[in-house]
Amino acid sequence: MTGSTGTITGSPSRACFALAALVAISLLGCRTPAAPRAAPLRTHEGLNATLWLQTAAEWRAAAFQAYRSAIVHLDLALADPTWSAALEQQGDFSRLPPAVILDMDEAIIRSDRFQASLVADQRPFRLEEWNAWVRSEASVAVPGALEYARHAHAHGVHIYYVTNRNAEVEAESLEILRKLGFPLESGFSDLLTMGEEPGWTSDKSSRRAALCDTHRIIQIVGDNLNDFISGAYTSVAGRRTLVDDHAEWWGTRWIVMPNPTYGGWEGALYDYDRSLPRQEILRRKYEQLDSWK
Image (cartoon, rainbow, N blue to C red; front, top):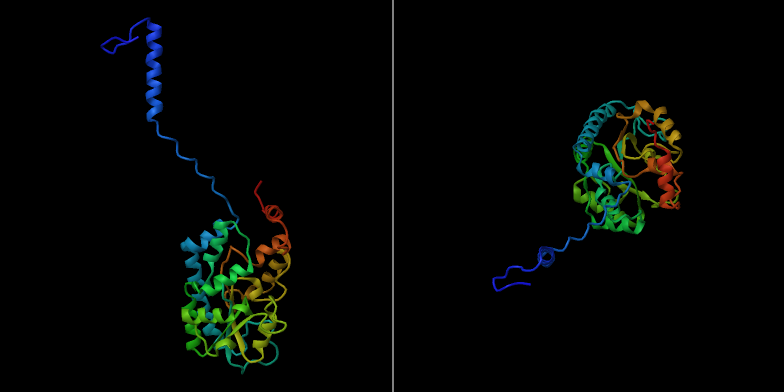
């Protein structure tokens, strides 16, 4: 009971109960609703690799380092008519005009924003999405690549762009090279895409062989073992053997750019079987870890 003064009257226990009830009602009436709990962040096996390409100062340093070394050895190659960077080059090529072969994606131009979209949306690679990315012409140059290409061109070296982009997006790919300022002497003849000619498969050996007929290939730049040598779609151990068998060519005739996001190295972990469920691919990747314990 309360009197005219608003004080609580009656027994002490009843007064305490009434006071507690009033406090509870007051607190419930003014309590701010709890914010909804944020959804847990999803993980993706390409997250760190893609962020490394996009944010790491070390990646930029590696790119500059690779292209500065490439320029030094390109000048040495020009002075040595016996020098060739193509295993497909046979016979007397000493009098052929010099050329270099450049891969495109992750070698001279960047597609990490496309990779980032796959990571962010938890999507696998799909060709139609890749072609849409190419048509957007949103790529930018890898640090040091333009400097290298322009140096080669200024010294009379023909530049060929040998890419596993498919022939369907050849026109857009050529426009990207033009827009970024890469040297182009013969237009479409300078760009060799997958499927453009019969026998031009993902293995680039046939395209390198075709160029060897007319030019002395003095350097190759790429980010995938397949950019340099045939038979690269093999086991992890087999790929290492191919590298070791040509150890003296790396950094001189062959300039490799770091790419931890995709490539033959990743496919070798699950026998290049992209039809496998994602969980099975992940399981096989974990099996390849060389753990301390």
